[in-house]
Image (cartoon, rainbow, N blue to C red; front, side, top):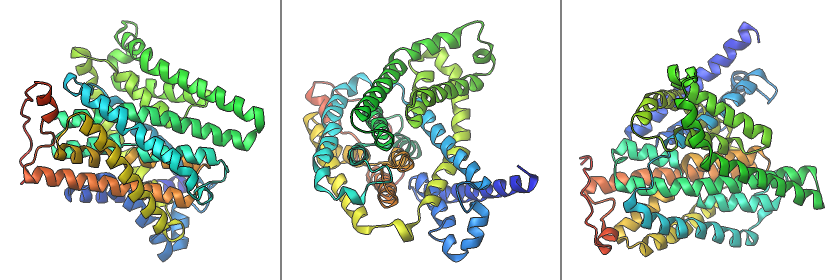
Length: 445
């Protein structure tokens, strides 16, 4: 790459990063999810807005086709941002299953997660799947993506909303994140199966298709089981080893080496890379306690800061840039998917929360939060679109649904806190003879 070409790439990165952070901070001040502003930055700079005003200049700035050096580098940063987002989310997925939340988590996870997925599976054949299907031409894969996109919850977005509202320490946050982590692990497994079906549909037929899918499912299942059960203990032992000078002297480098190792192995085994990033974060921080957790807290914070202010905003800005709402926006598809899936999630999660003994306000708070699709919803849409499972129109509907549901979550929780209402009343604990400990909430009236 010549100096001129490098300068062109850096200018494109500069504009995307600047716009994403400026609009992200603006939306944060408006008490809205930062991710919405980051996606909007890409929409403004992309073919939807600026591309209509100066299409030639936009092509010169960001690349006219996939082979262009600017498009190649931005594509790399897009994928690295996705992986870093999942890695940081996995690292944060610790200490989430507190004893007081186990019964409620079991009900919400046992009813609120599988019910939307099953309802979506049953409803999918009644829908015009041809209008959703991508170049892979696999309706089976489309059905799985449709069901997973209905049930998914955004760990990164709701974590960020909880942090911005000052409620990350509460039982409400712990309950939501604990069930969402387990739910998303299962749904990412479904997505990996869908990508395998799509790839096999293109390359094979008949018995070869069944064998390919079976092998892929077995490999993914083995990868997940080992990553969740064996690797956290192995990595803890390795991080404490006297001979491991990297972990001892440069914890940041050690964590990134683990991250790259997980992703590289996943690529070799044809495991969905975004899923591998999530498991890498879970593995590197899994089960750490006391001084060991403190030793890696600052390095994790450093990685999270770089990811959160550089790689992740770039990822979401490029997501927005890839949306051409003038060509791929179907208001009826968006309205149908948004309203239909939201109702299914509200009813399913509400039933699980009711069976757990929650009060009416508790149920509303939990359902609105669990409906926030956010980052994972967008990542799932991106992975499915890149794999040719879904077309550009359905991809746009999934991304906009993720944005709108995340905005609704941020707005509602902010409203509840401003009213001085409890996030969780503790009714479920009182029914079990446990008096809930009052939690200190931020004063934001």
